[in-house]
Image (cartoon, rainbow, N blue to C red; front, top):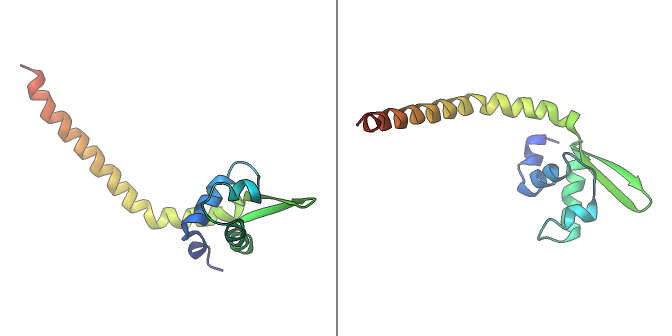
Length: 110
């Protein structure tokens, strides 16, 4: 399964964000959404099938956590794709900042 297609869905990205730092139960994750538990469960299944989350069972509860190892190459891919655009955006922001500072300077001398 193509990981980029998997995380293209906004709810799946949000699920990854929620379980990035800590394990979360499916119920805890579902409480953060305005859709049914079943819908969240299906999104978690897609993430699990893609290897983007890990699952730990404890009795009847399932605990989910983002699989940072699996997401590492994806982060590298996204960085390579967007890195140039982000650098350009940063340069434009810095140029605008310098321009604003230059316009403010003549008024400061009076």
